[in-house]
Image (cartoon, rainbow over all chains, first blue to last red; front, side):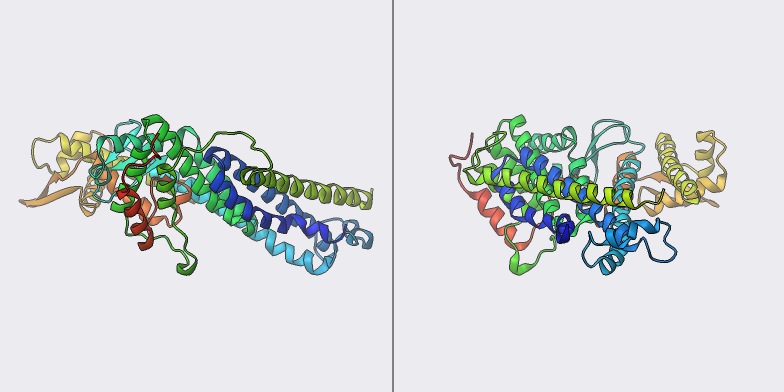
Length: 310
Length: 129
């Protein structure tokens, strides 16, 4: 099998240009689903690959509970540089497990604490907090999904813009966008090469909610103005970016997208367009990654089965 | 195990704060801790009520002034004010909340701000549907 065993670990690199293309050319809903799916598949594959390499490379280390047969010379022949790679896979796998666990734990904790902070308020969907700091967000889960917004932000928006804001947050809740965000976050923890996909999905999920809100309030321009106004009043926490490489941040891009024409809702575009190339490329990459991983896993499992002393 | 206990204790605190504050808001004027304790009618110890009132004072949700040998307490804000204070604490404590709470906007870099102002000042164009 040779170096192909390691393919799932580096295939996520192919997702970078795909994320770029999908972000720019696909409908945000399609892009979010596609990129999240790709990220999840690639993350699972890369973790499975890591686990298999670890088993083969380390089953003969003293004190290892795995059957010695799993690390016979014939088995090890399936993995190049088995010893080094196998040992390196142990801390890598531990890091993945710890990072994913921490992400899940923090996700739950923030949600719990935020819901608890709202205890004592009436259980309406929208919670308006008297606070001069302007912010708004969608808070899923708890007894019911809630939209949290401060008076500091509402005061800065006109009636139509307020409706746009609420429509945007409700779209997040209705589309269960936090699940996509959690999935790509876990994927990025499982394989750091998948980080660009996390950034891309964070952006496309916002765009998705923007487009839904625009449809709800009937004006893309109103939503654009609501976002712009809100961003200008709540500035002060600049996002850390590399100054030299800084392209336009997500907020101006969202506003620009809303001021431009509405994105087309084609399901599967033709292969001979840039959009099509992105969509089909992503799918092909995910399928290849999944198949190569499955191939590694099945071969490895068969070898291990054959090597298991009965 | 210990964490589980601590968690339920913390939730209890949040609810107690809300209860004490609502009792205080039902008073006609400044009220003493003893009055709040009576009003709540639960088996809350006097010292617990004092502790909660002091915590609310630190959050700026109640005020107090000396009346004889004890304090008279007045609510400075309502339940929403208390919730706002608690929410700020949650948000300030989480550096990575962006991924959990899908927020309306993120921060702006200076270049983004210029770009954004340009975009918003652009006259009505054919982009409108």
